[in-house]
Length: 303
Image (cartoon, rainbow, N blue to C red; front, side):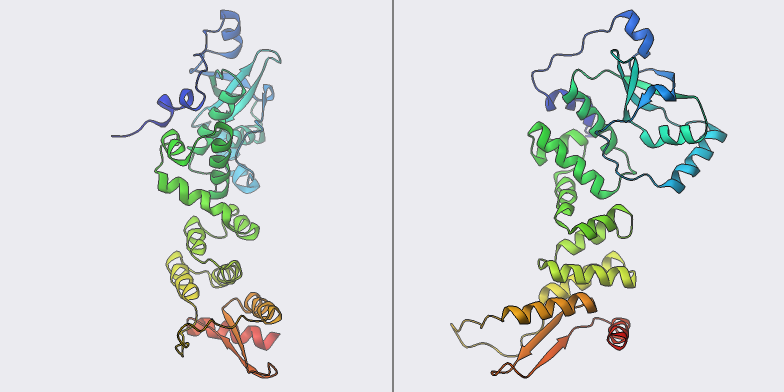
């Protein structure tokens, strides 16, 4: 049975809040019939600070503006009416609102919602936007996190509210465990959510970063990234069986730092081994294909 996320969800998010009272006729004439489509001057609409979208691609906005100018707005935006300022605040559709302004149009079709209070307004804004397909994975994850924090709900309750499975919510939230650089790559479409999930299977942050650099440089597919992540996480093949109950010797901090530096420079796993006097040793550089080997050679030659 299909679950309707918004049908019962907002009142559950904000328990104890009474249903909204019917608006006076004078207010409804100014704001437009709630739930119906009305036309509003674009200058009377202001952005919403709760908008989860952080980036608006200028080129895409220009394309949308051209489409709106030629064919009109395919779907109205969602707003709320502020009686005190006699203006409207966006709930969903900021990209369409911006493109309408860019197209030079003076009015835009809107659907008016009536939030009961600020918490209800935030829930409407976040859930309306999170159900759109054009948010990037980090924007969605941040929106989920904010809903959970603001309303004190867990992943199971959130999954019911937004009509997603708990596994989907969990996997999306885990993307926030990635480094800032990888998160930015997800935001700007440099890598996909599938790539991000593959990177999360690598526990060592330095190895994870090395695989990230490799997948960007070689434009690896999600499957190729998953395979590389498994190999990196498995580590080098053990050549000798250590003596029973013998604890492995810890590697000096300076050697670990050198390994990390080489891993970042070469974009692959690097292991440094030294002799007893530590003045001699060997460096093991891993590669996972002939193309990968050629890439590493080029890096070494150009160093």
